[in-house]
Image (cartoon, rainbow, N blue to C red; front, side, top):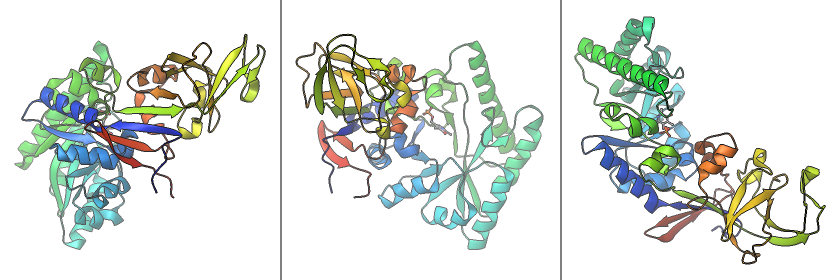
Length: 389
Ligand SMILES: *Cc1c(COP(=O)(O)O)cnc(C)c1O
């Protein structure tokens, strides 16, 4: 069943996505491959459609966070290589191999598990070695005193039966932060990463085909980190300061309609808790958009949403399914008028700043009951609802 798109919906502009993709490739040049990060349902944009668009336009690789996310793409006919960045239990090794999914290997214990399982099956699992150069999350710890041990651990893994080490990667912790300290930290991470690679390649006599580390901040600010492949997420979706600097376009526009308008006298308390009380006659619009759609309740009474007549202040507590806005002195704004929550007219960064967070969290929070409407060549090509109808 098709969504009615009559409540709140997200327009996913695939033309903007491909525009951003091409701009990034222009910047990184013809010799650098492109891995599109499509974890978390492509940051809320819809992984299947985003992956299809990237595949059609010649991207080289995709990355997801889990087996389920990888399988969603394979079951929807995405053929290009997929890397799982997070952990996959060893009982899934056969599926990884059979569906040609590449697995990150982050430590000795996982390498042993995967190797044993692949050998038992008489098959080969494609892996990318993850190096921890300072993110302190996943990966072979290689900094300072851990260098030698880290290098030996990686050497051991790439020689294990049943594993084919196609690539090696690391992740930057502060490449998107300003200042000399963050620059020095990122430079150190990069140098450590290349030192590890050089040692491993020298000692093993083998070369990694794909060395990669450049996330959004690095693609924008650290061209020397591109190596064989870049790995941006946010930049591809067109948000944040680096996207702005490169002239990229926001891919998602989250929209809703005014369902009801009422005019209240001064002294009227609006919504739960009565935290907002009108100080004069106020024309209030009700929107079918609330925290169950991904509107942070912590933004209550603190932000504005965009009408055709300019920004309208959000009034009172945000409810589960609704919120209220002030449309006084906006006579052109009536029941049925379209409101942009964030998008081309109301930058997502304004909302994420007020919420004390980053744009990533807002696009990921757009919930499954918000249908995605995909636009290609200026036309809606598909409407997708994630509810179980
Ligand atoms: C999420 C993620 C990325 C993409 O990060 P952006 O900041 O969105 O560019 C790249 N690499 C890894 C390992 C990640 O987890």
